[in-house]
Image 1: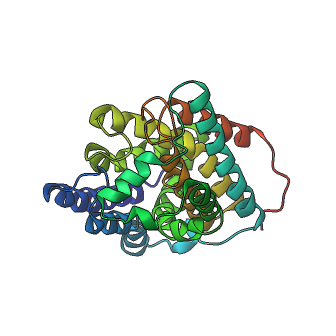
Image 2 (image 1 turned 180 degrees about the vertical axis):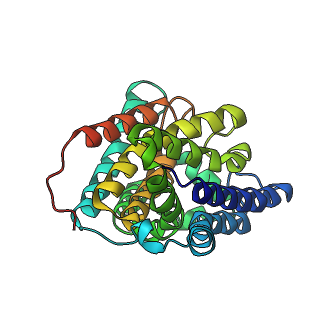
Length: 288
């Protein structure tokens, strides 16, 4: 049986806090275009911890069931290494297909990126050349930024995969995975309406975001449950964000967000394939 009281409380707290904070931010005139104001970026980063706060409040004051239910543990090290390779490989496939299908072209000279930096007041004379910047950025997204992004990713995943997913599993894997993915996507709705990920497509963007998070959720859900670790889920989220908002957005600045790239149909298809492959593939590695 689904713990309806716990699930309802968690969702009300998560969505109420998030929509209130982001709604207030948007009412100040904040939009996600070009280089968003720094204060807004800090607020959005902080909001990533709302699902964790909702989990703590629900477990502590509503269900009083103890934090053991959240799988707050590291688990084995191998899936951390595997996902650190699989997710970047997935992005390489996504943007390779985007290029091959004519849905976007790489900006090898970083013309758009340097123009964006100049609009923010950067001195282009001090910027490294593309031949130095691109390899450096790629290495950073592989070796450095996943750890930083993983901290904020855990703020979300302690809620989505640590609390909500196990509470919905009595519905069966397919329904639980789908519900978590759709809910996760709808949680982003205020930011989508403000231009996040789908600029120019505020309504369709909300629908597409739910599709993307549902496809990606299959992979994250499966490994989280298989290895009983919400910390692993936070790491996977961090690796994903490091790639999503790192080198690929810089290298492919003009992709139609509904069709190509990680937000479009190409990305949704690739993550759906990766997720189903993991679900159907038995894992005989130790889970402790």
